Length: 340
Image (cartoon, rainbow, N blue to C red; front, side, top):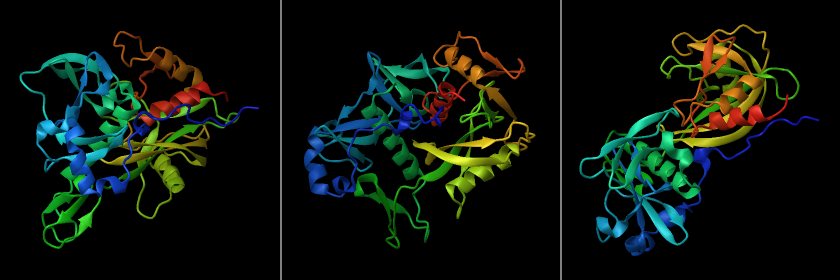
């Protein structure tokens, strides 16, 4: 008997090995005493970090002691792994970097800065190529940096804030209020038809601002006072006018662009129901067969700009799958590998 499909692998940005428990970052004596042996992850204004071209699966970290004898003011503690503490510090490529071709944020090849044997890559485009430790460090560094950019003033009195707990809290200089990094929950749902257990068609859509032929499953933010299942039902209804049933949780992935966590679900819907794309939000929505999704994986444009696109909908459109760092791709691959 066919079983309901589940994620076949851990989403790219959910991978991590570092110990990030609160007791580590609230122990100044411990952190300061270990600074001389710590490693630093650099993060540029554009959200890029260096990797060695010859060992591209690992971040090119720096010696913390090179930045000073103690933790610098803008350093954020990321965690500990195999006896080493890791921090993030703002940094830019030195000298005059050249541009080389590398994976990009939509899965296509793009030009990235390169200097002294290092590529400066972004998390969205390169996260899936990193090892588990590097992926977790980069994701955490990106999330903290994005939060700190938006936490410069107190939400209660408007006073200026400073960062405490080595980057994990802000404290108002006026009223003393402390605030901690925020994460916005968002659901992302793979909707399939009613055939069998897992359906034979999946509902995909594209936003007007996306690159040509790029389609994905539907997603949206959870509203105040709303359950996750309620959000699934509302978002699908709002975006494409379809009623879904039996929402089922699949898994999650942090998505620090700027501060979300994607909560993956699957649900069922009537393939005969008319699709009504939300004006200005959804450019096109359509049902795609499992065979077409499988073909798109086999002929993927990701990492291969010479591959041929996969026609869908009777040849009216081409299918470019979500980027390798997205939980959407993991969800689609699990569904495509399953049987109806």
